[in-house]
Length: 115
Length: 114
Image (tube, rainbow over all chains, first blue to last red; front, side, top):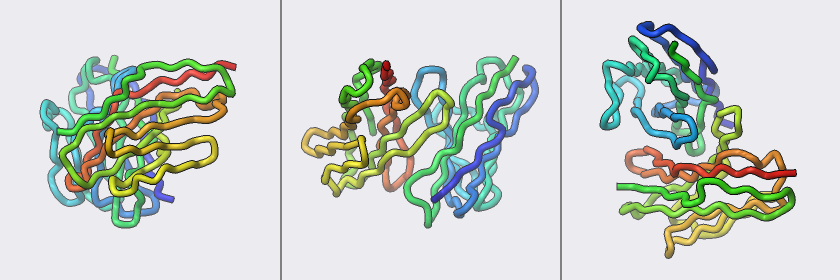
């Protein structure tokens, strides 16, 4: 079945630094990838939709300069949290879909802690 | 606008009890998908089911069953003979087939006690 790999699973970084999270579709071509953010004990909030080869579409209230998304190939999308601050600490999770995938497959998530 | 409501924030049952998790949705779309996901403490989202809006047949998979009622915009999830391993947060989600975006409910935290 469709598998999405997300790395790293956990990352701790210092305030002011940037962190890159990778989302890879392992056995299918992901034409579209989604990035979600989840605060503790809350639901998943869609941050942006990323289509291969084009600019990501950000949801209202999400800073595109803060959360850089790149979907350079059909198997890889990256989310870079730039100049991270403690309030960026959260659980980030990606999902991907493609022509041969069934529904949406989620990555295992990345827990970001900014100290 | 789309909305998914999971009215039950937390449910606690004793092992072997049956439990139903409610999900009510709102959408103006005529074609959409409904999902249920399980999120164990480890954090990853586990896909449980996808239901097309045109398919109102109920589905059973082992101890899991889903009741889709378009007339009441509900897509409820029942776990029969619950087990401790069923303890997790369960999310119901609605996908707009045109935009492909999913809207999630707030989740129901299920605790199954031994």
